[in-house]
Image 1 (cartoon, rainbow, N blue to C red):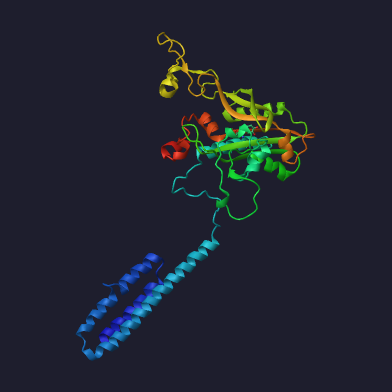
Image 2 (cartoon, helix red, strand yellow):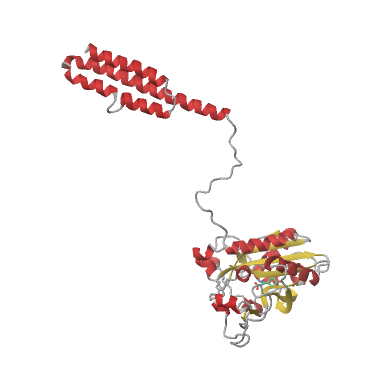
Length: 384
Ligand code: DAH
């Protein structure tokens, strides 16, 4: 018995010295295995207990327990000491550089092409001094139609297939006339004039709009960007200059603009604005080699014959051979619309415009099917 107890005591003494000299986590772990592991020194001593008479075992067991507790405590204290030293070294060392770029473990995503197009449009106008404004997608009939000079029985309402919201589905609260999903971003014109209360007004309003339409080129939800500029002395020349500058910034510096007379109830005069085709450069035709790579542009109406030394050009599918793309509606704000926005039409004039974001993105990036925007197919989205 005295022999075993002596072995245990010398084990404890060795452990004290060894643990005190352990310099790192690994050394501490090695000592734990050496002294306390299944095949360690303590186990080896305890194996000798089997040979002792039963009466002596508890005494040896007691010493063995004490030695195990002590070695465990030594190892624990050594670990704590190391931790503390590490922390102290960190605190004393150079500060953490929070400006280091993060490590990219997962590839980053990117903006949807529609978000990108809308952002590019608003960025161009913000460089021209415009602010970004927004309004609700569930809108009052008054803002969407009435205040924009489109009364209930006006045939212009037929231009926009409207989703009406049943009053019963809305919570309690005051109502002023019908409620609907806005069919365009133009109601933000009224809301903005009323909010600012006085000129100058210079805003662009990007957002979702809704119409009861669904086919290859129409989706029931789509996006528009509205523009409004109101001040003293604003003329149609300002409108032309602004939209020409925008077209050059968005489609490229060689882009030309064309205004055609049109009709909108909220502008007078009104115009439809075309830009020279961004795909064929306004020529209406594409060199044959390019068109071959894009079969849908080689329509049946080919320009020129089929033989000859020079391959004949083919009709540009994007502008259908006209060289022009219709991109937006615009005009001088109707005096009644200014009045509804709380601005005196005798003192101020203004212009407004509205464009479809899907259409702008399709023309800029050469996309031929609007539904691609909403299918969320990564093979499509990853191209932007
Ligand atoms: N709101 C019209 C639409 O959705 C587009 C439009 C045309 C907006 C002319 C305007 C404008 O501000 O002046 O069809």
